[in-house]
Length: 129
View 1 (cartoon, rainbow, N blue to C red):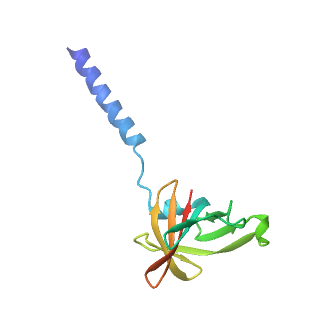
View 2: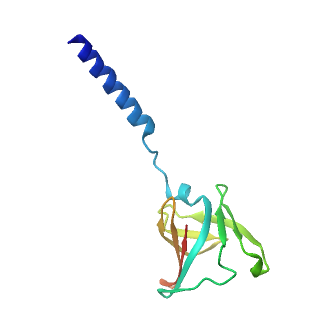
View 3: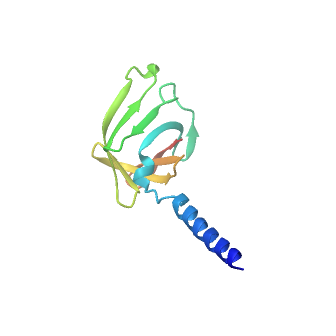
């Protein structure tokens, strides 16, 4: 009986330790945005349109120091744009270089959707993976 009780206690303690050590930490939207994103699609007024040669393969790199870099393909002529970014405390508004007409409508560790808004009207929607 003592062996079973001791075994059960050790098992419960070990299980509790493993559960807490493997528990996924809370990740904020700000932490999720910090990474390299690849532009996958653009919708204009709700209708998907094909990506241009310049947009295909475009990479957006949001860095933890609140700077960003957009890497274009050779077809664009310009290879990189850089600037500063900020995400509102509710993670809904994205400000790029002081311009806040970007709305983050979805963000997960593997997908981000940004809407470009003008007077509360969603003009474009960019999807990144």
